[in-house]
Every structure is written in structure tokens, then in C-alpha cells.
Length: 368
Image (cartoon, rainbow, N blue to C red; front, top):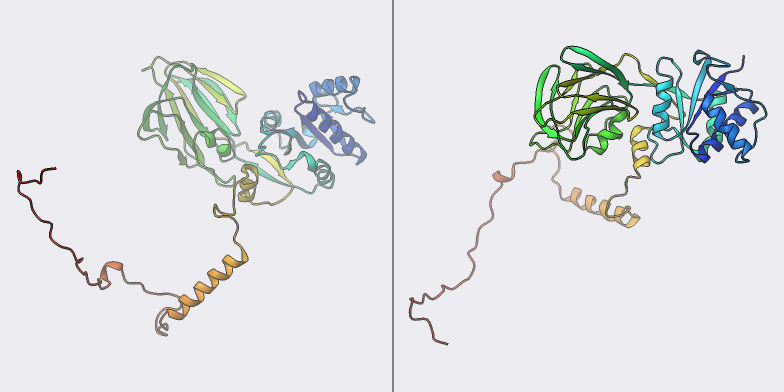
């Protein structure tokens, strides 16, 4: 039986519709079966009717009509990080990995770009990819001791103020121990995957995806101590909305799911046992991805090192080596002992050659 590939696109954009049709056509030519959401099928049919895209050789299957999610081998996401988060909602309770092709801006969760679409489809056909698991978080909302809402997030859960002109008063805690109380615009509780998203914009650290940890990052906090926290993945992060400013809050999870937070509401975040599986085409180090996505300079602010610079540096090192005393064979190899500067002999201080200034009594100043 041919493998079935779920194609997920941001069909509100014309370039995404073109990419979806192109991907489906390449999959069909390779003997695989493309599967679309019902809403995406309608969008593509409308685009074909308007002459925006060519018709496919055969109609792709529709999810939940022609097949079920359990029959899908891989999900190909065409869009930005928002499209990946949308797809993660869909495959949340399955083991289907997601392979993202960036059609957006930064696209930190994407594995390839629009120009590499053909190569990406070839890798899907050949099953030339690896799968890694990304940590997610469970989010629970309490009012008193009553659990009123439960959801999850791949990137972050953020507690935010509901009115732009007011501050939100919160108390934060880790493992049931209060950390600090302050007024703020909100608090972000993120996974390592989400450390390059909202938490990054709020001033949080970048955490490598393989690190197992959770982050708590205040947003515009009015406090002396409101630093980002990195805690154990087994910890419990808590944010409680206080009634001091009479300002309720709102909970956002991945910018897609929301819960109103009346005064006194408490949000608890823990590690979820259900990860999201991301397919990778290469084993590029995360540091290289970080440099490429953010276009970070790596040549230094003085510019690239030239051959002349290198030659001068080697010449200085050679002269310094010749001036060093011979090493004691009895001492540890490769270890040099440097005396503290305050124990070195001080150079003699020679007073400057100056003359005393004449003192003129008050009242005897020369008249102009």
C-alpha cells in the first residue's frame, strides 16, 4: 500500500496554495498519496477554477473522509511557524512527525525553504529524514481549588493583561515556593522550542532544543528582580493573578488557544508526557540554524581576518615564544606559573620636576 502524506498549507495565501499543488503533484508522480484537509481541498478547487494553479492528475484524498490520521506516515507543513503550530494541534494525539517548509519570515521550526521544495519531496519519497521529539507543556487553570480549564503548548503559555492601559499584578512561584510579586504586562512560560519565539522577544535566553528545561520570562515587569528563570523539566511553574490592580488577565497558548483569567486565577505549567515529533532532513547543529535564521554576524565587528592579519599574529606569537624562559623539565608539562601582579617589584617613582607655586595673600592681588 502506498504511503500517505498529509499536506498542510496556509491556503489563505496564493503562494501557499501553489506550493501545496506542486507538492501534491510531485507526491503523486512518485507513487505516494497526498492527503489534504477538507477546507484545503475546497481552497485548491477554487484556485483551479480561477486559473491560479493547474489541476492535479487525480484528486488527493481528504482527511477524515477517505482516510484517518492513523494511516498518515508524515505531515508536510507549508508555511511559517504559525502553520507548524496549527499542524501540531492536529497531530497532537498521534505519532505523525511534521516536516516544515518555510514560506513565512524566520520560520525557526522549518526544515527547508521554498526553493528546496523539490529536494524536500525527494527526501520524503526516499524516507531520508530523522525524527526528533520536542518537549511540550501541560497548562491548567484553577479558580480556588477548582480546575476550570486544561490545555497544552509546544512553544509557550503566556499570562497577559487584558487591557492595554493597565498593568497586571501577579505572583510567580516554582514548585509551590513563591519567587516574586510584581506588576507587568505578562509572564511567558516556555519550552526550549519556544525559547526563540515569544520568550526570546521578552528578553529570555535561547535554549538548545535538546535541553530538557522550562522557562519563566516576565514581560515588561515593574520590579527590581524580574529575571528570566530556567528550571527543571520536572518543576511546576505557577502564575497567579492578584486583585491589587483589579485587572483580570488572559492566558494564551501558542497564540492559538485562549482562556480568560478572572482575579485570583492560578495558572500551573508542567511538562507534558506527549511530545511533538519533528522530522529533520539534516543534522545541522542548532548553533548553525540560529546564525542562519537570525542572520547573525560571525566575522567580528572589525571585519574578516585577512592573510596579512594572520601572518602578523603568528609573527608576534613567534617573538613572544623566543622571549619566554626555558621551561623547567620537572614542572608540569604545558603549565606555566604566573605570579600575581601585586607581588611583582614596583618600579621606582621619580617625582616630577616642578616648582612651587607662589602664594599671594588675599587683598594683594595685582590690579588690572
